[in-house]
Amino acid sequence: MAANGAAKCKQLTSANIEQFLDSIDSVLIDCDGVLWNANNPIEGAIETIQTLRERGKQPIFVTNNSTKSRRQYVEKFQRLGFSVSEEEIFGTAYVAALYFKHKLKFEGKVYLIGGSGLAEEFALQEIPFIGPGCDHVVEGEDVHDWSNIELDSEVRGVLVGFDPLITFRKVCRAASYLSNPSFPYIATNLDGRLPMPNKGRVIPGTGCLVEAVTKAAARQPTVVGKPNKLMFECVKEKFPTVDPERTVMVGDRLDTDILLGKNCNLKTLMVLTGISSLEDVERNQQSSSESMQTLVPDFYIPSFGQLHKLINKQ
Ligand SMILES: [Mg+2]
Image (tube, rainbow, N blue to C red; front, side, top):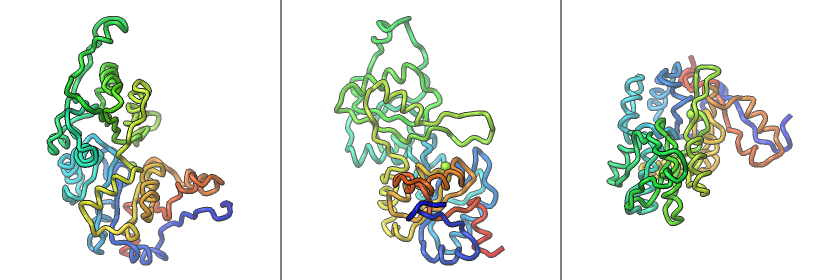
């Protein structure tokens, strides 16, 4: 039984779908675990995007995954059969570059722990950076050798995103730069794991890399990804007509997607094809903690791919 006043999460059904559609103009959609898992589209997701467009709803894609630039995302969407445009996509690589450029009005070089997607978005904003690629040679045998690691005197800030080439030396460098308290420390997101279809395998997410730098630097980062409202602010900046009251956030994670929706006063719709489960929702719904009850979406549907069937009454 839900506690008194507990938030209720309703399933979207043929009985309430029209009322739901009438209440929204824009649909913010997470990607991993909603539209696809790894390189496999969720069945029906392509048709759902089409149907939403036909019904006059604006889809906007918001992802914490920092491995790709918007251009690289368009390639992935198209390869998987989705029809999207670059301006509809907001990834943390893009949002982090905007944050440095417009919020921080950053001058100097960024030390960037991340890959080609981040490098591309920073280059497009004309923000100088160093860091992507291999940095794997640990020279010497002890702390006296490692403390001689060379630093770039033009670096004035650090960004940590997803980097499968993370090394001890990269963490040394990032933490050393951050010993200057005036240098900003930014992270793309704190997701602990990537959604993985293979049972028994765990793929660490960006949050694990951020933890390493945070511990070494003894500082906390500003996180630009969901659930930070910044993502939605970037959407609003590009599409000023987007009205929070008439927008729904669709996602598979309670602590990022659904919390972003709650933080921005959006409607929230959870899908069950990714990280969080209905059991997680029920646990939060029954909790007496207010912060846990915040992590209860307004609606759920087993799969985003089923939405077009509900809408088209199939
Ligand atoms: Mg997801």
